[in-house]
Length: 152
Image (cartoon, rainbow, N blue to C red):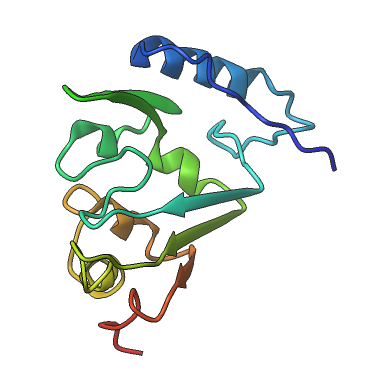
């Protein structure tokens, strides 16, 4: 199979970037990018990182974007920067979702151990901790530090 790369336009206009990216996704023919029963594109794989606060992509806790179900791509406008993000339904529609978490630093000596426990074994909701929406159905690749607090 050929690799299809979808690129950003490169502007700082997050709403325009999100619209253009969604248009590029939907323009891919179904024989190259199948759709599920509801019309969501089914990517072969999504490789997702996760933040200490449980954000995935640019889907942050307690923000309305986390609960979006109609759009494929959303603008995320913040005072310091803007970005775009794929929505949880689009991420979860993939044939395979891989969530990766590793590393620690002086600032975060425990790494992401607490976050991984909250995502995988906590009582979180997607709204309070977006990574929890991927707890079931995804493959989680964690280093020893990130897995340190999990009950195996």
